[in-house]
Length: 223
Ligand SMILES: [Zn+2]
Image 1 (cartoon, rainbow, N blue to C red):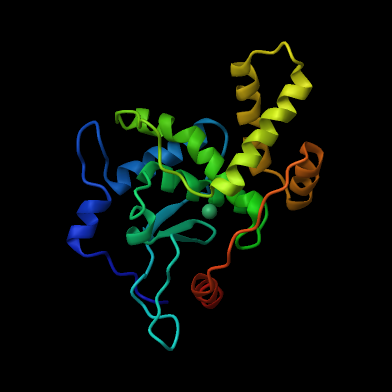
Image 2: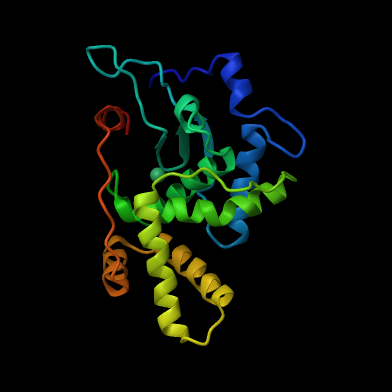
């Protein structure tokens, strides 16, 4: 097992200082994230924890290091603090995305860079970030910085459209959106075949995700 170094202090401070109303430390955010998932019936595995990804350990002969945001095993989320929040993503958003993967992987192991998996993980993160931030007594974000737009937009439109069809044209938009959120949670807990079927029924096609070879090599070497 490689050692997992802590980031240098300035980065640890950057990733999440405890500023009342603004940000919370990673451990506080992690605890709140797990609690929010469990409160809506999406169980993270027992002993789920987070740690820093060993981002500075070379993974190829040229000294290249892991360039991904996170690596997930069955109950551990490993974050690269430089990348994870370096693109200005909110830490609750990052954790919610990765915890969604943990929950999903309890149901079935998914392929790396699976479009449906990324779409549902990021979509759930968007749904849950306001709840997590409220639990931490943080101010709401004006508009969170999120990723995987290419997958998330068609996925969210598809779930909304499916609910609109089943509820009829007279249903209120808020009720349809509530239905869509439940549908996304159900999607997270589906097996791979069920997911493919659901996407086909909803008429949703998700574009592919570009491969990140360093991450894949490292993950294969450290199952
Ligand atoms: Zn992901």
